[in-house]
Structures are given as structure tokens and as C-alpha cells.
Length: 155
Image 1 (tube, rainbow, N blue to C red):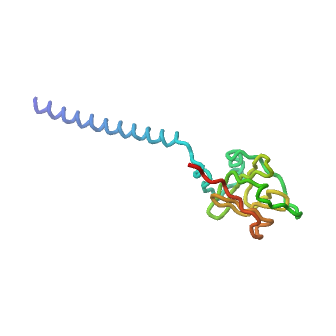
Image 2: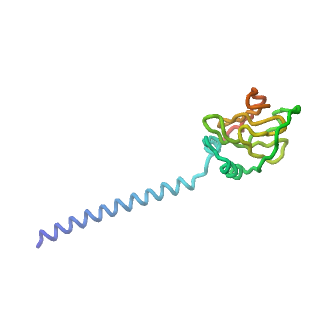
Image 3: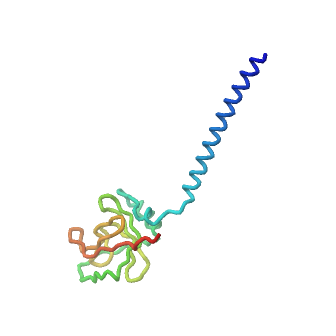
């Protein structure tokens, strides 16, 4: 009788130990994900996001994410002032092939999102983007006329 009692007690302790281990793992997982999801996203993580194959339907999602408006301008072959003080780069979504989107403010107006190859202003298009910069040119084949850089990150 005593032997059966000792055997059931040892089985009971094993079950208690396994239950405690599973509960501890579940609590650790909940704490990890709670801290991971509540942590603020750094500007570097946002600007260095890689999005190599955005479809047209995804473009509007990026527009809303970056806080911009839809752009419906087409380039014309007029003389364009490419003064760097007119343009301000506020955000970039860049892929490995220098494709992506840039959020650019022109002449102090509200920033608008532009896809690589789309017109930024008459006669000036977004030629390419990288994680911290965007290049503007008169065409995709032309050399970059202006390189816009994101502001330096402050710790």
C-alpha cells in the first residue's frame, strides 16, 4: 500500500512540474510579445523598410501610412528649377533594386508620395530611392539632377 502511495506521489510531482514549466513558458511568451508589440518603432526601422514588389493596390496603403495624398501630375518638357531648397524628403520605402516610394514636400506644401518613375514636378521625376535618400532627374535614363537626403537621426 505504501509503495502505491509513493508511486502516485512521484507521478503527481512530475505532473505538477510539467504544468509549472508549461505555465512559465506561456507567461514568458506573453511578456516577450507584449514588450515587442508595445515598443516604439524607430525612424530607422520605418525608413529602411524593404518593399521590393508593391502592386498598385498596395500603393494607396503606403500613401496613407506615409500621410500623403494621391499625385496626378504628368511631366512636360519645360525648364524646371531643381533647387534643393524647394524639395524636402520626409520618408522612404526602398527595395533592393532602388525601386519604391518617397514622401516629398515641394515648396513648403503638404508632402505627397511618389513611386519611382512618377513625376514629382513638371519635367522632373523620381529616378530612384535608397534607404536614406531619393534621386530626382529629368528622365529615368538621365543622370540624377538632385539627391534628397533624410534628416540625420538624433538619439
